[in-house]
Image 1: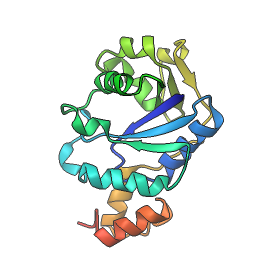
Image 2: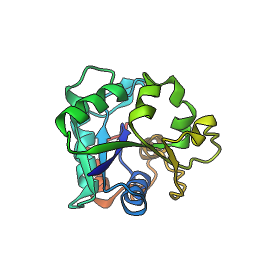
Image 3: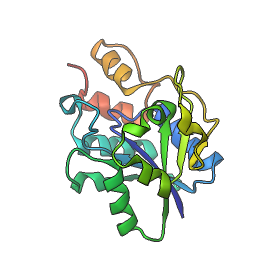
Image 4: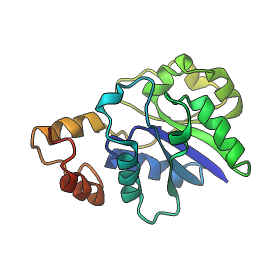
Length: 191
């Protein structure tokens, strides 16, 4: 099976993530999309993150009973910070029957050459890239392993959602319903 790996902090998961994952699973050759919940993205401040299990739980609430979308916590057991090249090696070892590709925005493609062992990733995996406003994906967009997609442009961010909740704004339509109910019940991001 051809699996698309959608890495992220998902702090919190929102409808933009869900639209992109659904697009990749329905409109590309990817058969499933796995949300890889990152305990700690090397490029992000760890203190702003909710607990990894809370974020994984919200991803599972968002996915529901979808056959095309799954969550995966493989990075929870790997050394921190998580590097994609290491995660890919562990996934290939654990699921040798699957073929893995990465899903990323143009903003990540723009800085992809800064990733650890990025040439190795490009040699062994495809990158399915979704558009991001104001981004220049650079020369890598022409690489044979890069698939530029026409996914809907999503200008929604977890940062904006967290800040809006803290400011007592209604963002209930910005996250899947079950996620909103959980966020509200747990009082996450309110302080």
